[in-house]
Length: 168
Ligand code: DAT
Ligand code: MG
Image (cartoon, rainbow, N blue to C red; front, side, top):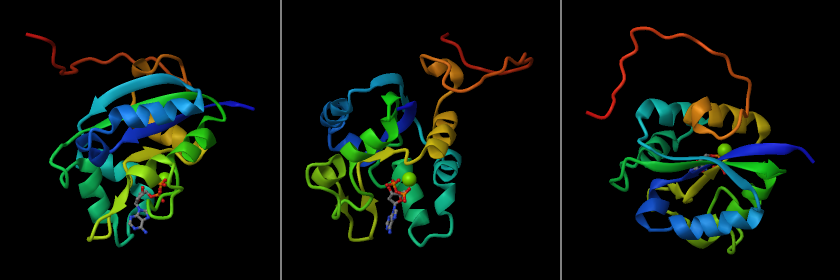
């Protein structure tokens, strides 16, 4: 079976419920390696790109508000790249169904997710659902130097006049 990589996000509800440790313990059941990890401030642009395939759905605006952290007052998610054999399916199995009320009760979403009275699926984590999604999502959330291996082809560019912050 092929080595795959997959993007996991611990969503704002997972963070404010102090579930990070529990989620990582559950993910470790998949016996994969972590190839990248970081805390990300979620801009509207990032949120909309991540969920662009759902644009037009009745729940889209609430979904963007949720992943940006506006519902939970914490504009951050924790992002991971997990890598290993059959990684996408293994992680999705531990994560559970999209709808937390239909998810297997022992899955992460089944155990910790809920549907709000506004109809938002607060399902605690995101996990890529196909090879194509994983590639698109990892390239969206991580730069090549933020992952431990060359997961996808890269190219070198020379940048000039780039403004960046350094420690003062
Ligand atoms: P998944 O996150 O399992 O890959 P998805 O890509 O179909 O599911 O949808 C992305 C998110 O959108 C999902 O985690 C929760 C939300 N969502 C999907 N279907 C929904 C629905 N019918 N009502 C409310 N939110 C929904
Ligand atoms: Mg999806």
